[in-house]
Structure formats: structure tokens, C-alpha cells
Image (cartoon, rainbow, N blue to C red; front, side, top):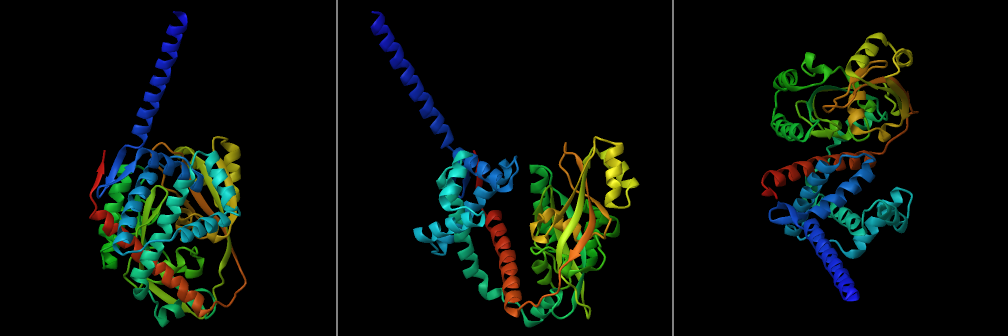
Length: 399
């Protein structure tokens, strides 16, 4: 009797365990978002969030995971309509190339991802969408993206081959520290992008921008084009006076620039090889007090010594290693000038100060390289606009 009861009890436990596993699996693979009736499951969301946290070396990627998977569905649907499909060999090659960028072979990268709970299919899907989208936008926009000879000349000048180029920009920085703010900022940025008047854009900067430049209507001083980051330089180079960049999403903010004027100089402008900057963090009151006391980066060390609640670090990095959020802020600063970074509610206040720019020796840049860079930047901008149109017309349902 005892043996029979024990067997029944064990069978019940096995059955209960199976039911729980089935219920768990059902919950994981239930659709949580539908994009034009294409489902995104809870498992995909969880996997993408883990994967992005590894790529970005940061936590709190839930919203970005949702956005990126929604965009993936839109991109793949657009590629299907254009009859663009990758072969298995193309996907495998792209996976290997991506791993090589991290100085790993594919097996090593997959093993590292597995240790963090990310399966190989998640990585494959991420790479497949990226390469497919690249093929689509290249085919769609290549003919419209060829730069003019004048644009190439101007970009060559900015690289120091034929003198220098200075640009006069107006900026608008929209707060995006929460999901609600981000959605609102995207809608506002889309509206601002349609402005054609420099006066109207400046007035909107005065009303909406959270940058310190808002007191001047967002109007920045003349800046050397060569001082901009590698990612931003071709974007600005491709603008004509009065035109506005695509919305640039950075940490806790969305930024737009309008080109007011451009001027060529006979002086060569060497590229920046390194940027030295300091980051001060702490409570809003302590940071503000330290900024009032500091005239140089070194002064912040004394502020930290006087108030141990503050933290201050100095960094020296090549422009291409600096995040877009920081690069956008540093480009408009003079040496020993500070800027208050946008922060989300509950985060510590942060101020960035430019300590110095280190310039490289001048080198010749070929017209072909410049043309390729400008074409890539223009395709990227057109692709972002195309994706925004796809998202605006999509039927997105959250379950």
C-alpha cells in the first residue's frame, strides 16, 4: 500500500512538473506584441534584452529591446516585399565577421553569449535582419545618394587636404529620460524636422530645448568640421544651409542640428586624434557648486577632495571611441568649458568638461574615400526616414 501510494505521489509530481513546464513555455512563447499581425513573443523580448545588455554593456534595455524587435519585423516585411532574401552562406559569413570585430571566432562568441543566457538563434536573427536591411536600403537609395563634386570638395577641405571648413549650427536637445518622454520627443522631433526657416528653428530651440544653448535660441558658435566625431562629420557635411539632421537618439535625449552657414578657410584643419574630457557626477547641488568653483578640469579634483560624495574621472579617447551622446556635447565646447548632460529622473547629475583636443598630423584623403563616406551617411539618413514611415503606418498592438 505504501509503495502504491508512493508511486502515485511521484507520478503526480511528474505530471504537475510537466504541466508547469508547459504553462511556462506557453507563457514564454505567447505573443506580447503584434506588428502588422506578425507576433513578437515574450521569449524573443527576453532574449533581445539580454543580447543588447551585452552589446551596450548596460542594463535596463527593455524598451530598446521592444523597439528593435518591432523595427526588425518592419524591416523584414519590407525586404520580403522587395524580394530580398539572404542565403544561409551570407548569414553565416556575416555572423563570423561580426564576431571577428570583437577579436573572436564564431564559436567563441556563441559560447560567450550562451554563458549569458543568449541562444545562437537570437544572434543569428539579429545579424540576418541587419544585413537584409542593409541590402534593401542600398538597393533602394543608392541612386539618390551620390554626393556632388562640390560636396566632396567641401568634405576634403574638412579633412585638411585643401584647407579647412567651419560650420555654424543650431541645436535642439529634447529630453527623453523615460519611455513617455522618448515617445513624445520622437513626435516632436518629426515635426521639427520639417522646419525650413532658421529663425523658426531657433525659436523652437528657445521654447523646447533643454541644452544650455537654448538661451541663445540653440545657436552655436563657429566650429571646425574636423572637430566633429567620425559619425557626425559626414552627416553635417551632407547638409545645405537651412537643412536639419535626422533626429539623433542619444542617452536620455534626442538631438537635432540645423546648418545655418558654412565657410571654407585657407588654413588646414588637422583631424582630432584624441579628446581629453572629464566627467563629474553627484547630487545636483554638489555638482552645481563644483562647477562654479572650477575653471579647468584639474579644479574638479579639488572639488572632489572637498566633497567626497562627488566622483570625477578624466578620459582620453579617439573621437571614434566616444559615444554619440558625448560627442554631440563635446563638439560645441571650448577647452575647459563644461556642459550639464541630460539625465533621467532619479539619476545622479553629470557634468562633462572638455580638457583638451589633441590634433593629428595632416594626411591626404582620397576623393573616393570621401565620396563613399558621404554616400553611406546619406543612405543611412534616408533609411532612417524610410523606417520612420514604416513605423508610422504600422499596426502595432501590445497584448
